Amino acid sequence: MRHLIATSNSDEAKLRMALGIFAHFGCRLGEPLLRHDFFAVAAQRDWRMADIGRGIAVGDELEYFKRGDNNSVCLTERGFAAM
Image 1 (cartoon, rainbow, N blue to C red):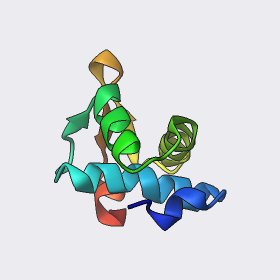
Image 2 (cartoon, rainbow, N blue to C red; image 1 turned 120 degrees about the vertical axis):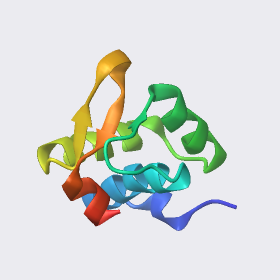
Image 3 (tube, helix red, strand yellow; image 1 turned 30 degrees about the vertical axis):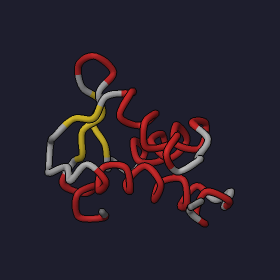
Image 4 (cartoon, helix red, strand yellow; image 1 turned 135 degrees about the vertical axis):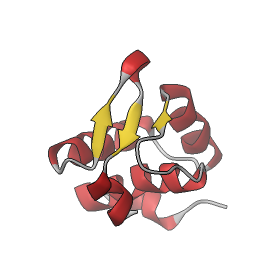
């Protein structure tokens, strides 16, 4: 089933998509996700990776995410609270 949020063009919707991927994996504060984790969920939900990338970029600006080793992305306290 296609998730409705995938059709929204707003940065907030794209951020929610990225946060939803962390929720999908049950991530806790500071737990990293790798690029292939985002690809896998985006493919399941028929989301565009460009939208996920923009959501991560917005989250970076809001300090919801922290970049880690091997292009990983971790939730910060702000990101975890927003999830």
